[in-house]
Image (tube, rainbow, N blue to C red):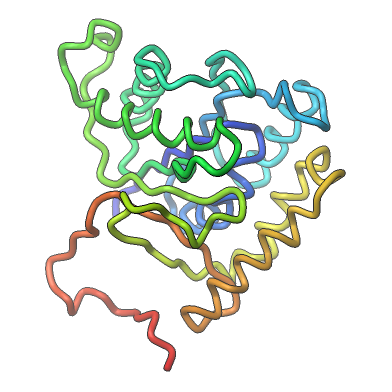
Length: 238
Protein backbone atom coordinates (compact mmCIF):
# COMPACT_ATOMS: atom_id res chain seq x y z
CA UNK A 1 0.00 0.00 0.00
CA UNK A 2 1.11 3.56 -0.70
CA UNK A 3 2.64 5.46 2.18
CA UNK A 4 0.21 7.72 4.01
CA UNK A 5 0.97 10.87 5.97
CA UNK A 6 -0.52 11.34 9.44
CA UNK A 7 -0.51 14.84 10.91
CA UNK A 8 -0.82 15.00 14.71
CA UNK A 9 -1.56 18.39 16.27
CA UNK A 10 -0.86 19.17 19.92
CA UNK A 11 -1.31 22.33 21.98
CA UNK A 12 1.78 21.67 24.15
CA UNK A 13 5.08 19.81 23.73
CA UNK A 14 3.94 16.57 25.43
CA UNK A 15 0.29 16.35 24.31
CA UNK A 16 0.78 14.22 21.23
CA UNK A 17 3.05 11.66 22.86
CA UNK A 18 0.78 11.23 25.90
CA UNK A 19 -2.49 11.33 23.98
CA UNK A 20 -1.80 9.31 20.83
CA UNK A 21 1.89 8.38 20.77
CA UNK A 22 1.24 4.64 20.62
CA UNK A 23 -1.03 5.09 17.60
CA UNK A 24 1.69 7.01 15.80
CA UNK A 25 4.25 4.31 16.57
CA UNK A 26 1.89 1.77 15.04
CA UNK A 27 1.53 3.85 11.87
CA UNK A 28 5.29 4.32 11.51
CA UNK A 29 5.73 0.56 11.89
CA UNK A 30 3.31 0.17 8.97
CA UNK A 31 5.50 2.36 6.77
CA UNK A 32 3.52 5.58 7.14
CA UNK A 33 4.94 9.06 7.70
CA UNK A 34 4.13 11.00 10.87
CA UNK A 35 4.38 14.78 11.17
CA UNK A 36 3.84 16.40 14.58
CA UNK A 37 2.73 20.04 14.78
CA UNK A 38 2.95 21.65 18.25
CA UNK A 39 1.20 24.97 18.85
CA UNK A 40 3.26 26.24 21.81
CA UNK A 41 6.47 25.56 23.73
CA UNK A 42 4.82 25.10 27.12
CA UNK A 43 5.67 28.63 28.21
CA UNK A 44 3.08 28.68 31.02
CA UNK A 45 3.81 25.19 32.36
CA UNK A 46 4.50 24.69 36.07
CA UNK A 47 7.59 22.62 35.29
CA UNK A 48 10.25 22.87 32.61
CA UNK A 49 11.43 25.86 30.61
CA UNK A 50 10.34 26.28 26.98
CA UNK A 51 13.86 25.31 25.91
CA UNK A 52 13.76 22.13 27.98
CA UNK A 53 10.35 21.18 26.67
CA UNK A 54 11.38 21.69 23.06
CA UNK A 55 14.39 19.40 23.65
CA UNK A 56 12.12 16.78 25.21
CA UNK A 57 9.85 16.91 22.17
CA UNK A 58 12.81 16.61 19.83
CA UNK A 59 14.07 13.58 21.75
CA UNK A 60 10.63 11.96 21.54
CA UNK A 61 10.33 12.68 17.82
CA UNK A 62 13.71 11.08 17.16
CA UNK A 63 12.77 8.04 19.23
CA UNK A 64 9.48 7.74 17.36
CA UNK A 65 10.91 8.40 13.92
CA UNK A 66 8.56 11.35 13.32
CA UNK A 67 9.00 14.84 11.94
CA UNK A 68 8.37 17.74 14.32
CA UNK A 69 7.64 21.43 13.95
CA UNK A 70 6.54 24.18 16.32
CA UNK A 71 4.32 27.08 15.29
CA UNK A 72 3.90 30.25 17.36
CA UNK A 73 0.20 31.02 17.88
CA UNK A 74 0.69 33.24 20.92
CA UNK A 75 2.18 30.75 23.37
CA UNK A 76 0.94 28.39 26.06
CA UNK A 77 -2.36 29.51 27.68
CA UNK A 78 -2.82 32.19 24.98
CA UNK A 79 -4.24 30.05 22.20
CA UNK A 80 -7.33 31.60 20.61
CA UNK A 81 -9.91 30.24 18.18
CA UNK A 82 -9.68 32.79 15.39
CA UNK A 83 -9.29 32.72 11.60
CA UNK A 84 -5.59 33.59 11.64
CA UNK A 85 -4.71 30.59 13.83
CA UNK A 86 -6.93 28.22 11.85
CA UNK A 87 -5.32 29.40 8.61
CA UNK A 88 -1.85 28.86 10.11
CA UNK A 89 -2.71 25.21 10.78
CA UNK A 90 -4.40 24.91 7.38
CA UNK A 91 -1.08 25.98 5.83
CA UNK A 92 0.61 22.94 7.37
CA UNK A 93 -2.19 20.71 6.13
CA UNK A 94 -1.64 21.94 2.59
CA UNK A 95 2.12 21.62 2.90
CA UNK A 96 2.18 18.10 4.41
CA UNK A 97 -0.92 16.71 2.59
CA UNK A 98 -2.02 14.30 5.35
CA UNK A 99 -4.68 11.69 4.77
CA UNK A 100 -5.30 11.42 8.53
CA UNK A 101 -5.25 14.27 11.06
CA UNK A 102 -5.24 13.77 14.84
CA UNK A 103 -6.21 16.59 17.21
CA UNK A 104 -7.00 16.98 20.91
CA UNK A 105 -10.55 16.16 21.96
CA UNK A 106 -12.55 19.39 21.92
CA UNK A 107 -14.14 18.90 25.35
CA UNK A 108 -14.14 22.14 27.37
CA UNK A 109 -13.61 20.59 30.82
CA UNK A 110 -9.82 20.50 30.45
CA UNK A 111 -6.90 22.83 29.74
CA UNK A 112 -8.37 25.55 27.46
CA UNK A 113 -5.55 25.12 24.95
CA UNK A 114 -6.51 21.47 24.44
CA UNK A 115 -10.07 22.01 23.27
CA UNK A 116 -9.09 25.13 21.34
CA UNK A 117 -6.43 23.16 19.48
CA UNK A 118 -9.09 20.58 18.59
CA UNK A 119 -11.54 23.17 17.25
CA UNK A 120 -8.82 25.07 15.37
CA UNK A 121 -7.66 21.87 13.69
CA UNK A 122 -11.20 21.03 12.65
CA UNK A 123 -11.62 24.49 11.13
CA UNK A 124 -8.20 24.28 9.50
CA UNK A 125 -9.07 21.01 7.79
CA UNK A 126 -12.03 22.74 6.14
CA UNK A 127 -10.08 25.87 5.22
CA UNK A 128 -7.36 23.77 3.57
CA UNK A 129 -9.99 22.80 0.96
CA UNK A 130 -10.95 26.37 0.03
CA UNK A 131 -9.13 27.62 -3.04
CA UNK A 132 -10.01 31.28 -2.60
CA UNK A 133 -8.11 31.99 0.62
CA UNK A 134 -5.42 34.52 -0.26
CA UNK A 135 -3.19 33.47 2.64
CA UNK A 136 -3.00 29.88 1.30
CA UNK A 137 -2.76 30.37 -2.46
CA UNK A 138 0.93 29.46 -2.45
CA UNK A 139 -0.01 25.81 -1.82
CA UNK A 140 -2.57 23.64 -3.66
CA UNK A 141 -5.82 22.83 -1.87
CA UNK A 142 -5.89 19.58 0.06
CA UNK A 143 -8.78 17.48 1.34
CA UNK A 144 -7.93 15.19 4.27
CA UNK A 145 -9.47 11.74 4.55
CA UNK A 146 -10.13 11.51 8.29
CA UNK A 147 -10.06 13.74 11.36
CA UNK A 148 -9.86 11.92 14.68
CA UNK A 149 -9.72 13.36 18.20
CA UNK A 150 -7.56 11.96 20.99
CA UNK A 151 -7.89 12.49 24.76
CA UNK A 152 -5.01 13.97 26.75
CA UNK A 153 -6.53 14.12 30.23
CA UNK A 154 -9.01 11.81 31.95
CA UNK A 155 -11.84 12.53 29.53
CA UNK A 156 -11.36 9.50 27.30
CA UNK A 157 -14.86 8.24 28.04
CA UNK A 158 -16.55 11.64 27.64
CA UNK A 159 -16.42 12.48 23.93
CA UNK A 160 -19.31 14.94 23.92
CA UNK A 161 -22.56 14.91 22.01
CA UNK A 162 -21.03 16.00 18.70
CA UNK A 163 -19.04 12.78 18.28
CA UNK A 164 -20.62 10.25 15.95
CA UNK A 165 -18.21 7.35 16.32
CA UNK A 166 -15.13 6.08 18.12
CA UNK A 167 -12.34 3.69 17.23
CA UNK A 168 -10.58 1.57 19.85
CA UNK A 169 -7.16 0.43 18.64
CA UNK A 170 -4.99 -2.32 20.13
CA UNK A 171 -1.63 -0.89 21.24
CA UNK A 172 -0.33 -3.91 23.16
CA UNK A 173 2.70 -4.30 20.89
CA UNK A 174 3.52 -0.59 21.10
CA UNK A 175 2.91 -0.20 24.83
CA UNK A 176 6.50 -0.37 26.11
CA UNK A 177 7.84 1.95 23.39
CA UNK A 178 4.98 4.37 24.06
CA UNK A 179 6.07 4.57 27.69
CA UNK A 180 9.60 5.41 26.56
CA UNK A 181 8.17 8.27 24.48
CA UNK A 182 6.29 9.64 27.48
CA UNK A 183 9.42 9.36 29.64
CA UNK A 184 11.16 11.78 27.27
CA UNK A 185 9.02 14.48 28.92
CA UNK A 186 10.62 14.23 32.33
CA UNK A 187 9.79 17.84 33.20
CA UNK A 188 6.08 16.97 33.13
CA UNK A 189 6.43 13.92 35.37
CA UNK A 190 7.55 15.94 38.40
CA UNK A 191 4.10 16.91 39.68
CA UNK A 192 1.64 14.20 38.65
CA UNK A 193 2.09 10.57 37.68
CA UNK A 194 0.92 10.97 34.10
CA UNK A 195 2.40 7.60 33.19
CA UNK A 196 0.07 5.88 35.64
CA UNK A 197 -2.90 7.87 34.37
CA UNK A 198 -2.26 7.06 30.72
CA UNK A 199 -1.45 3.41 31.35
CA UNK A 200 -4.57 2.93 33.48
CA UNK A 201 -6.72 4.33 30.70
CA UNK A 202 -4.97 2.17 28.10
CA UNK A 203 -5.56 -0.89 30.27
CA UNK A 204 -9.26 -0.02 30.63
CA UNK A 205 -9.71 0.39 26.88
CA UNK A 206 -7.85 -2.87 26.33
CA UNK A 207 -10.25 -4.70 28.64
CA UNK A 208 -13.15 -3.31 26.62
CA UNK A 209 -11.90 -4.94 23.40
CA UNK A 210 -10.20 -8.03 24.80
CA UNK A 211 -6.58 -6.91 24.51
CA UNK A 212 -3.97 -5.88 27.04
CA UNK A 213 -3.78 -2.20 26.08
CA UNK A 214 -5.70 0.04 23.69
CA UNK A 215 -6.29 3.69 22.74
CA UNK A 216 -9.53 5.36 21.70
CA UNK A 217 -10.02 8.12 19.16
CA UNK A 218 -13.26 9.89 18.28
CA UNK A 219 -14.81 11.16 15.07
CA UNK A 220 -17.45 13.85 14.54
CA UNK A 221 -18.50 12.01 11.36
CA UNK A 222 -19.69 8.43 10.80
CA UNK A 223 -16.93 6.01 9.88
CA UNK A 224 -17.61 4.85 6.33
CA UNK A 225 -17.01 1.29 5.12
CA UNK A 226 -18.03 -0.42 1.88
CA UNK A 227 -19.42 -3.54 3.56
CA UNK A 228 -19.87 -4.98 7.04
CA UNK A 229 -17.66 -7.89 6.05
CA UNK A 230 -14.71 -5.48 5.74
CA UNK A 231 -14.63 -5.24 9.53
CA UNK A 232 -12.46 -8.19 10.55
CA UNK A 233 -12.31 -7.40 14.30
CA UNK A 234 -14.99 -6.83 16.89
CA UNK A 235 -14.98 -5.23 20.32
CA UNK A 236 -17.51 -7.76 21.58
CA UNK A 237 -15.88 -9.81 24.31
CA UNK A 238 -18.88 -11.56 25.92
